[in-house]
Length: 412
Image (cartoon, rainbow, N blue to C red; front, side):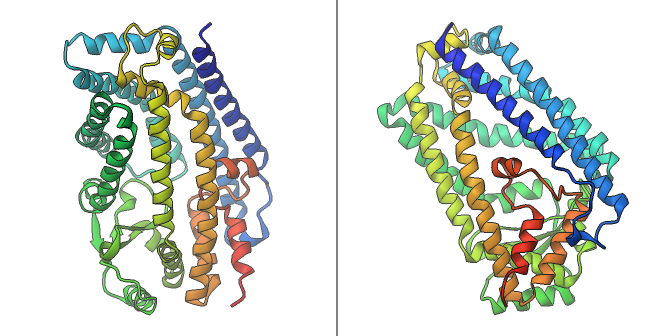
């Protein structure tokens, strides 16, 4: 049997087994007892509801992962990729448009494969636990907008990558690295202005005590912002969130309307101060630089397997092509991606602790952020006791109990 095929099947199987093991361990880590920190925040009924929410989502994810893994393996073994390639070639177009058709068909198949699960998650699971506020119309409009963005932004970007590898010789990976990252950076600036408003409405925070407190705090910390906005997160979900968007003088503070409904002014300011901490410690720039390096590694490794005959034989392909090489590389990159994501998550969790400390010391009130974190956890039915292996592999934020413990240890 082809050695590449054996390797790819091993990667798929081991990834599936790892995720299954982590899910089972995470379920076993659930504790029926309310942690002492959350006494008075959770009553027993809501805490049990949060545990059922974690259990049902975990089991549903296991089912989805099992189905997707099985379909992927079958599609690979029966020569499904070659069938899609022959369809794309049947139009007798140049390599780049043929590659766009090949990739587009695969994306549509992935969408159709995942659509029943997304529908069930949104309109059954999230609905059952009181989170879903997405109408059927909004759901499918979001789907259509995302598809159009993929075509309008992803299509030209993929065409650029294919052109570089077709025309730029041995340094194609380097040009792709610089070009793709430059476009990604541009999108970071354009997203708050053009892309995000396609999905949500952003309105300035109304005048009042909260806005006055925010502006006074940002002025004290010498933090220039373009504005404070409220996003209609309740259009899709009752979950709470807040974030910063934009760079430089275009920075914006964005609160979900659901967050403002549940948190008091001091707690909201604590959450805001945490987000400001990320900017003050330059966490976004550090992660952006790390992403820049990761993109370079990805394209360099990709350049090593372009048009590899044995690899194409593993996928039962009858023709070599640059565009199929990109897709097949995704299977090979999985172990590297896992290692890099572990590393990224490790630093991200450190950044969260630093941002928490910044919020506590600049507001002079760790309790405000602690109270905010507790309410966020309660309202989002968060898992308070995730298994350490799940945290190690997947968590970009430390578990809330560890964050609260670290905040309580800060000496003011």
